[in-house]
Amino acid sequence: MLLVANIITGIVAALHIYFLVLEMFLWDKPMGLRTFRNTPEKAEITKVLAANQGLYNGFLAAGLVWGLLMGGYEGFHVKIFFLTCVIVAGAYGAYSVSRRILYVQAAPALAALVLLHF
Image: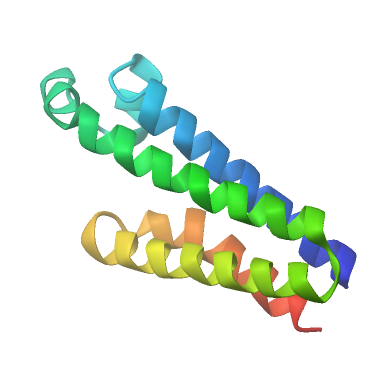
């Protein structure tokens, strides 16, 4: 079960690296505009905020990778902490921005968190 939990944790980390790229580098490009349903004007105004948000997603990914690489008892607790952070961020994003954030961000992290406890 730990292997499956670690694979899902790795997927959550990869998703957050993808979010970093979308928010920091593609926010005002066609892919970013489509993904976030933005207009070019709105994307230009919010570009700096999105880059900051992307940086935070990068920190979440780094923490999850750190926990995976650390392994053992210490790595378990690092993964728990960062997965919980992802779930809280996803829940708030679902509340404040779009419900789909709950499914894309929080649900995979919750699955990994639950599996880590088996």
